[in-house]
Length: 131
Image (tube, rainbow, N blue to C red; front, side, top):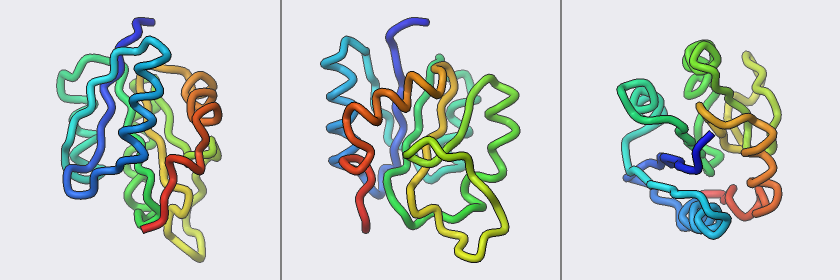
């Protein structure tokens, strides 16, 4: 695996915390290119439309809903990727509270353990911020 990462975030809701996380990865020797795009669907679409891998999309906000991630789980898995909340927990659906209170992470190109290790070292709570 190379040391290049394309990190996506929403252009209408830039996250200083996520920028700091990408800076943390740069200090670890990774070449991180941060791309500003639209919402979850636009970010996942970009992951599949000829973008070089690996791709990392972290949504550090608690306002998304389960339907913002559920449509992508199978596609991302078929591409060798994974989806979890920012603490590494698998999503469940048809919950009473449909909000993704712990944000989400979508990655294609790096193993979950490696990315979660970065997030844990940086501090998931330092990325996840309430609106």
